[in-house]
Amino acid sequence: MQIWLTVGAVALLAVIGFGIVFALRLERPWLQPIAIARAVLQLAILTVILNGVISNAGWVAVFLAVMIIAATWVVIRRLQLRMVTGVVIAAVIAVASAVPATVVFVTGAVDFTPRYVLAVGGIIIGNGMTVSTLMGRSLAASFGTNRDEIEGWLALGATPRQASRRVVRLAASTALIPSTDQTRTTGIVTLPGAFVGAIFAGASVVQAAEFQMLVLASILVAGALSVACLTWIFGAPRVIPDDGRLVVLA
Image (tube, rainbow, N blue to C red; front, side):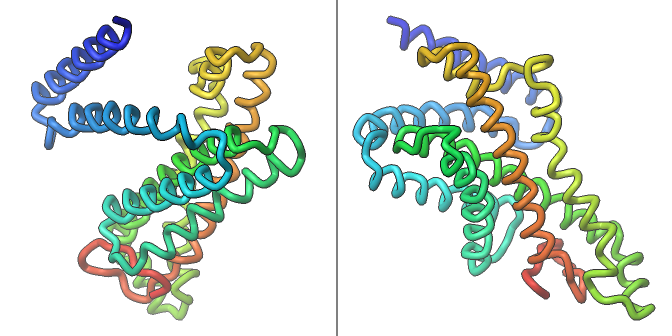
């Protein structure tokens, strides 16, 4: 019976969200209800899959690889990148996620078991995707609005990276704001999902807090690594593209 109450509440929230966005005449008001519907479907599939995956190291590795591919696809679509750039973006997300996760498990702060690898890896990959998208969109927009400044520096003899330095730094800083604010306001403004989920799973409040601290620190490191990689990859354009797309090592 509980599942139908949940579905009903989610459906009602989707309708309310659609009504608000439609009333404001925002673009594509159906995107939010579709996103909720997709989340329901994907979580249902995930629930079925995880019953056979969560304790198997091999399947956990496969599942994390699929998550990286899916995250890469989202970034490519959001930034309107060419498909050949997918390998580069996938590498950025994978490296940015692997470094903090390795620290967490090598130090012994979290047990190195398939269950925890999936939980920690999944959270970090998702946030790496978000930071990459935010920086890419901010960077593409900033290149367009600051075209004259960049081309002026180039005309004065600056290298492409020097000419774009201010714009790139601003985009990187902007991309890190959500994860930084989330960390700063944890326990005051928000109760993070990992903390609440750990408590619901039976962990003590102290254990849940420890796990959440590790997750937040890992997210910040993954975000910093993501913007560092994207700075190196996209931060030195010799010519600002007219179509607003980012160019790899142009």
